[in-house]
Image (cartoon, rainbow, N blue to C red; front, side):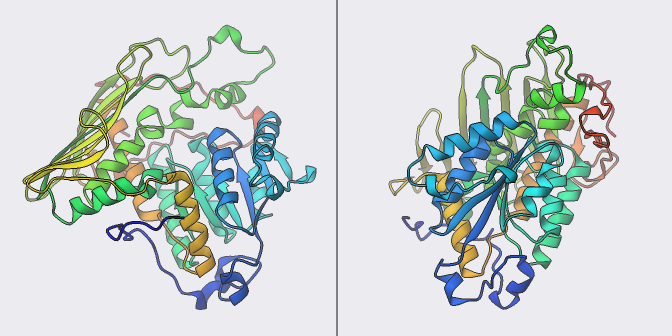
Length: 440
């Protein structure tokens, strides 16, 4: 793997001591010379066998010479079969896919079986389940890759905060699915911004304009014997408790760019506008939200984010960071990754696959006995996205930690407790109405 440019930031990497490796929950010593050389087997498990989970498994198996996929879980068996078949078609990793039939776990609680069977677990289910899965994996002492976002409501975020705290105490690694943080061009751009090349950051504008990710099917296509919970899970993207809405599930990548530009210092407050222009067919997510974030710093930085998931519209995923001495750009009008102004610059270095880079660096950190932990920043970006959604849903100005509408004080729990498997009664959530939907 090509090495990052010298300007690459490593602020997010939690360095730990091999001397306390016994608390990692692995079946070998991280401090051993054999392990450091990569000669000890790392057993990998996958929870959530959709496209992103299958991709994460592929990258994990490519990241280290002595890893094997030994256990998988999903709520639906056909997803497991699809994922394993897909992985076995890839020549470089086919022999590392060694999942016995009794290690293909199906069901809402199947994640526990995978976590209990492996050293490294990849969490890639719909994000409504993420806090529960992350909590179990950390308590079990496992190394973790967790897809973004990490929760869909504030109680879920607070659970994740506790898991991150415990992971630090146990010296566990947490690799977050904010993949752009492992992209070489963007790493160098943000490092230059942090080093002052564009001066003080005064404004940031990001876009995530695209079509629907998983359009909601019409109600009359639902099988008669399918329960409400299964119908929701099969169409998870269209329900806020499962996906978080398009802003929290997908455009959170752009939220993460805004946070990155501000050195992961959260905004003081935000307002937002949003709604639904195309019929939701039973789902309850908005199809567009635009958020306006405010930072309480000396230059009163403002951040703007436009998110839309409507077919037939202009598509764009871009960022401009405007400073007192120049501007940093990702995509859109100027293309590429560059800086204009007093000290212009264009990235011209290597651009390896960021998905692979994040797993390469994560497994390398495990071999060194210094697991990476992205926990703090992944919490900030997830909560910033939920903050923006809340402002859009309620029509109110939402603060970070001060006042009656502080997002950190929200007690709204939108994820139902699954007490009876697929038979658990669930209520179809209503679409939010700005000005009517209260802040809870």
